[in-house]
Length: 335
Image 1: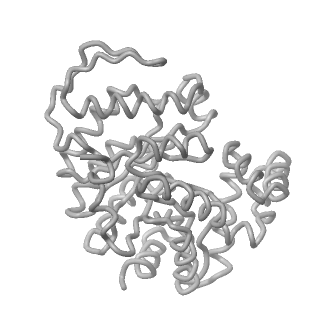
Image 2: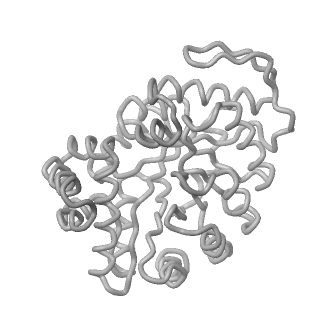
């Protein structure tokens, strides 16, 4: 059975949609929002990991609030855990969810890896390759004697019996080498902050070689007041441009050099006070969903037209969190 066969059921569902319940929410709010969508058509619920909620723990709790929806990590930072530890967490969470886990892996960023975890950010592509190889071997329940360029394991075998030996693994990818690796060894890819036209081209190019599931997490702000939603989205986008060097450099190479430079320079002068005002309309429209419910639906359609199989709506609350999520749910999930 090849990887495409393993995830073939993923590609047969029409107009899939997912949501990401992120770091701005409390544990209680994540679980409350999960309950709100547990009876909807939503494909999957994704939880990011920055420096707040531990991912496998919250995914286990989310799985208890749902019955059919898949649960995904977006993403587990591979520098924060050994491959064996991730295998143990994935196997445990897949058992708790009765076989509904999607394991999203990523390399995070230099500040998080080096400043928060005390690890050296090196060899990200080779490290990811070895992580995926070791995790898949671990889930097979075979004894592992692995010798790689980075990792060497001896006589490792999972004690517990995995629910599935083939848990889908999605790779977060920005630069081309990681994109290539995602199509080479992944069951899916997770894109984030890619201009729509660039994404259309890269998806067409890569899918012509091999079909995998293409997910894209999209900064999403919905309000009955369009300008309120736009300003909220601009602030979120400006945050990532300011603190995420890899996003800043990628966007500068793909049509937004002036914008990223202006946003970053203003950030260095005054922090986040006003640099969101330098996010242009074209930049916002290319990367985010923001506006009224009707406007948001039309913008989601544009992302689907790039070839994205699974848009992941990144919930950014406006005002009261639960009221804001209720509007997002009504916009995308109550049809």
